[in-house]
Structures are given as structure tokens and as C-alpha cells.
Length: 214
Image (cartoon, rainbow, N blue to C red; front, side, top):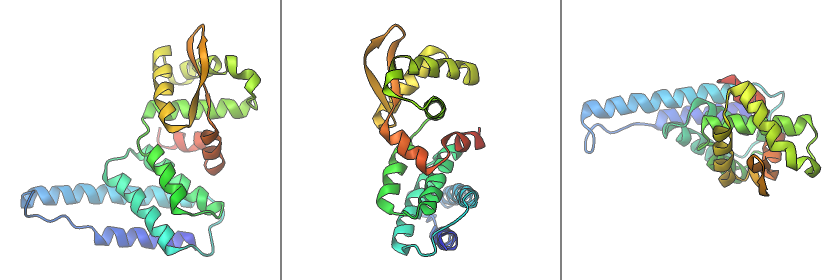
């Protein structure tokens, strides 16, 4: 089962971690850093297990090489200080890949590079954009008003002013999850859901995951 293999790999990862107390750090400093990294890794393990248990099935067989590469990248994000919400997104992608029987490192590494750097405002915008696109069965014909409607939702549900919504959406262009509508509207730039956002939405419950650590 993927759950057993993945949790075993996380345990192996934790057991292998040790921060030397000599050299760059003092003994005391090394111990403090080791405790910090250990705490982050333990938190990441708990989140991963929670998300894996959200699914209703796991792979009967999974390549240990693929799983090891995925776990290493996930735990590295934790060590580097990724926020709990980002870790939950990453864990949900792992669970989603397992449920789709596509637990491959290359795909996960692509998502990890995108998700690990997301800020809280960007996650809120992604959740609203995806939810609204699903609610209205988004078609290109709605592109002229879509972003205005999203901004209204962001104002109502998150108290985002125009500049905050626009700033987060603009920064999301780097990810391919959001795309820019050509030209300007009366409200300025307009943003639309990208194809990659739809792909992410097939793997995970974007709105549900974003709400779990709110």
C-alpha cells in the first residue's frame, strides 16, 4: 500500500537527519537547529498522513524510487520553512496522485516548485478563482466579467481590496495557474483560470485544502 510505503519513507527520512554540532554552528546552536528541523519534519509527517487518509484508496504497488524522490522533496519544503497550508497542498497532491494511480516524481516535483512558494493571499485567490469557475461552468464568453465577479467574492469572503486581489493575481502569473486576459477592463487588468489550475483541481479539492489550515 502506498500509505505504508510513504510513511515508512518519512520515518527513514526523520531517522537519517542529524545536524552536526561542530563547525559552522556551536554545539548549542546546532542542537537548537536540529530541534527546529525535527519539529518541522514531524509537522510535515502529520499533515501528510492526514491528507493520505482523506482518500478512499491507495496504490497496491508503488515504486519506492518514485516515492522516495517525492518524500525527499516534500520534506525539504518543510525544512526550508514552507507554511503549513503549503505543506497541506503538497501532501494533498501526493494523495491525489496516489488516488489517480499516477504517483510519479516528475509530476510531483513540478507541482512542488509551484506550490511551495505560494503566499496566503495567492492561495485565497486561487481558491476563489477555481471555485467560481466551477460554479459557473466557466466559458471563454464569460472572460470579460469573470475577474470582476471574483474580486467581489474576494472582497466579501476575505475582505480583499482591489489592489490586494490584483496584486496576488498578478504574482500568480508566474505559476501558470492564472492567466492574463489581453487588454484592460474598466477595473484594470483581468485574470482568468489557467489550464494548470484545472489540472490541479482534478488532483485535489483546492477549496477544501485551503480551508483546513485557515
